[in-house]
Length: 448
Image (cartoon, rainbow, N blue to C red):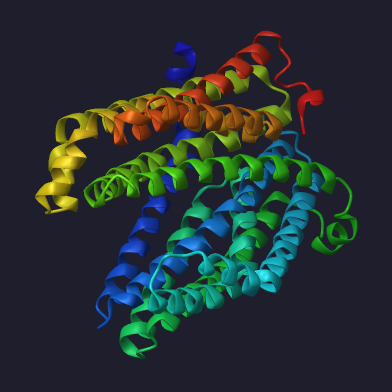
């Protein structure tokens, strides 16, 4: 253990993958703030409401298909670890083909799906009109948005995090600039905000494909035309892994959606306070995601190379830095949480309500770091079934805790969320510990 922590090159490998992803993640909330600021300066509130509702719909849709990135990262990293050039090339072609197939299905079905969703919405007619307008434009960016998942996953699997970082940063900067130009400059309102995002997605895809071509040549991979013809071989593994991660993502989305809607039944101050605290939770996820991405790439590489010693050193080093950051976040929320809340909201009632639940939030980083890291471990090992089953258990636990503590109101929701994070970490840790002890974690029989 001490040898791994003293290895400076190992620290460099972890940070070379984790830090770029943490930095690029920062641009995601920045884009949301600019969207809100630009649309928020228009003369009617329903423009902002429409973008918020339509944006939530499209973001949830694309987020649920984020398995394209995770599966691509794991399989590519394993091929990289065993120096399988044909395998690295094949997974990229398969991933892009699947992304574009799913995008075609989304575009073909978007009108009946959006109509059904808005039919059951309690939003005003004006908000519904602009939300549907925003969604109907943004959906045309699906081929690029989903392809970008594959591109990012493939580059990460090839142990390159700098190119995905620049891909995210540049795409979001293009989106911000086009937002300002189309909405404030051309006066296109909601259509302008949606069009800016679509063009940014396609700009990102073109940039990403150029990055892939550079990495392709650097790795000396076989000609793309040759792999297109042979891409159907081995695609079953990708489809099975994607299915399991998709089911996992559905459960994850169900818990966060339930927390938002159930909080809304407890009063305006509670739902506003939860929104403030959930923004802190997103900060935790952005920090932890960077190390989870690093874990995916490094574990996949070690699994592909069938190198138990290398895998152990990666686990120790990445866990060490995740723990350091988690402690820092916990201290920040414990000592300065009230001050941070006051910066986000200047409403005394919301501040007072949020301060009540800060202790729950302070515990989140140290509890949640394990599920983030172990997710990365099992993504790298392409054991999607384990992740799926763990999420089933944790989601059941979430609703059980909330039901048992229902009379405690919002405390029940936060207890359920903390329990959900803990159960994810515990179940994955038990399975990993068993596989490690039995020396079967690297067994080909376990690979999806």
